Amino acid sequence: MAEEFLSLETNDDAPQAAIKPEPRQQVKHLLIGSPDTVHCTIQNLHVRGYAEAQAWSPPVKAGNLGQPGDVLSVLYKFGIGFSLA
Image (cartoon, rainbow, N blue to C red):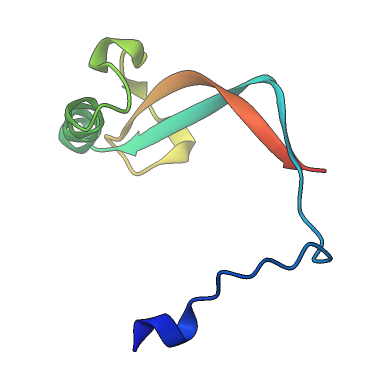
């Protein structure tokens, strides 16, 4: 039954999006929340292999960016950007 939906034919006339790599670009991640929530989120991202826990900035008071008592931590991560050409 699934074979009815699969087609081995290719349509060479169909437009193809070309993906070209861009130079490395910096992405800034901001975590804003209670000290415990920010700490747990950093640990969670570390366990998932996204970023080393030590790569995050030490938490600082979030000021006007959050609720009273909230902290802010920043991660700068580099990656390769892609654009459709």
